[in-house]
Image (cartoon, rainbow, N blue to C red):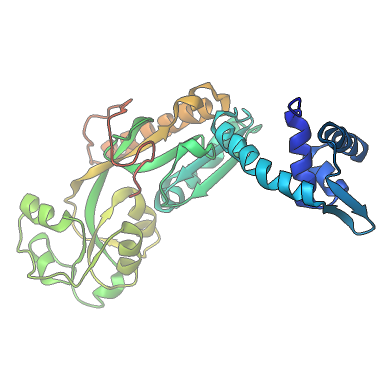
Length: 320
C-alpha cells in the first residue's frame, strides 16, 4: 500500500484527540471542510473508516483507535525533535534570570531596553531551575557561576562582591559590630564564604554558625528577618540597604568565587531581538562596573568568555 501523506496523518491525530472536527480545525488553522477532506482521503487510502460520526462528535472505530495508538507516538517524537530547530520570531524574546538578579538589577533597568526596542515582546522567566536550551524555550539566560558550561556561549557581565549585612532589628539599641567583632554575633553561613572572609580580613571565627543554607535566596530572607549576619551579594543587597531593610556593617568586602554571565545557545546568534538585548545588557553591565569603581569599589578587570568547556550538565547553566 502506498504510504499515506504525513499531513493527513497529522490531521487524523488532531481530530482523534479533540474528538471534534471544529476544535481540531481551529488548532490546525484549517477550515472544517478542509480537515474533513483530509480525513476522507486518508480513509479512502486505507480502505476503512476511522471515525463513527454522531451528534456528540467523533468516535474512533476499532481500526481508527489502532492507527492512533501506532502513529501518534511517532508524530509526537517528530514534533519534539524539530522544536529546538524551529527559528524563534525576531519580535519575541525569552530570557531566564535568577529571581534575585531579576528583581534587584535587571527589572529596574529593563524599561530602558523596552524604550529602545518597543516592537519586541519580552518574556522574562524568573527561576532558579537549570536552563536546558535544547527545548527551545529560551533565547538566553542570566546566570551566576564560574562561566564554563558545555555547548553554550557564556559572556561575563560583571563580577560579584560579598560584604557583611544584617537587619537593623538584630541590634536594637546596641552598637553595630566592628570588623574584628563580627565573630561574636550570630553568623549565617553559605558555602565557604565566612572562612574565606576571616582568612582575608582577620577576626575570630565562631565555633559554629547559627544557621547554614544551601542557596542564597533563603539566606537573604533569613538575614532580612533578623536571624543573623550574612555575607550578601552586593548586586542583590543594594536595594535592601537603600530601603533600610539591611545595614552594611563594615566598608571591607570580598570578591565572590562566581560572577554574573549572559549565557546563550548558538542559534541565538541569528536572533535579531536577542542580539539587541545582548548589546544593551553589556552596556548596562559596563555602566554598573563604572559606578562601582567610582564609588570606591574597584572591580577586577572585566573579561568575556566564549567558553564551551565541559561541565557536569551539558548545555545547562548551573543554578546559583
